[in-house]
Image (tube, rainbow, N blue to C red; front, side):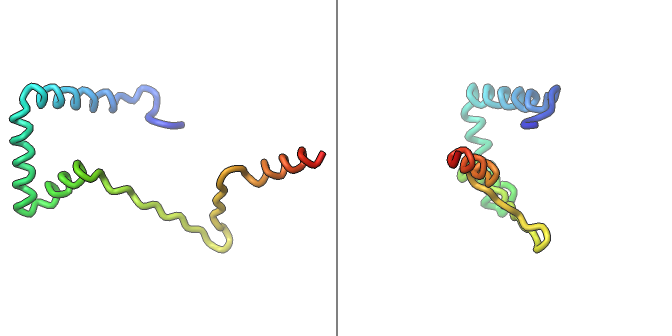
Length: 96
C-alpha cells in the first residue's frame, strides 16, 4: 500500500497551515524578509538548528543513507530488469 491510510487527514492539516503561511507572506512580504533576517542572525550567533534550516532550504535536505547487508546464509540478491524466472520463460518460448 502506497501513501497514507484511507481517512488520514494529516496532509490536509499541513496544507491548510501552508496555505495560511503562503497567503500571509504574499500579503506581507516585509515580514517574511524580517523572519529570514532573524533566522540568519541566529545562525551567525551559532544556532545550529537555524544554520541547518538555512542549508535545508537552500541546498535541500540531505538524502538518508540506506545500507543493505546480508550474511553468508541469507545474502541479499538484487535483480535489475527482468527476473531470472521471466528470462527462463522467455528463453523457453524462444526455443519452441
